[in-house]
Length: 225
Image (cartoon, rainbow, N blue to C red; front, top):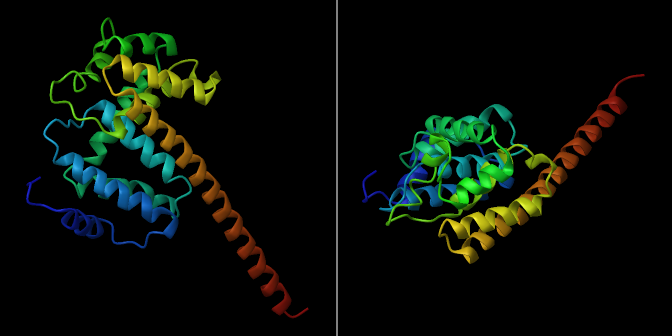
């Protein structure tokens, strides 16, 4: 995209691609991702690689859980991407490919490969780390979440404590040359915000269910006996 494009331009492009009302609960997600993707698209050292794709899809899927109507979730993701010059379908496919590749191996294997910057890893997994190895590599929180997402896809991850997986991602990030404090902060905020969002979605569902019950009672009381 041209460097002359602004955040406002990205927002206009998004609303043109997604002309639907967004529930208040999800507006912050949309605004934050729009700005984040806009800024990343203008960074010289940024690459839309598998690690980024895994992080982006993980963040979107986690925070859009419970979005209604459900059939608008994918168009919403595609619009967020296209508004900033990204191909959402390709990023989704790239993330799925990365998680599938990691899913054939154990957590310990994946930890070892990632910590050694891909040394000895299968080609696809090694390729995930090419961007990190560039001298002009630009870090973003989506890289940290991408690391966590890949670990969660490995064999045996489902039996591990979530905190243990986050700790492993912290260690891997440090071994890869990422700033440990940044990775720690980003993953801690991600985990905390996911919990808050889950609680908010649960409350919203309970409120909607209560409202449906109220309307049903009102309708029954209004019906002739």
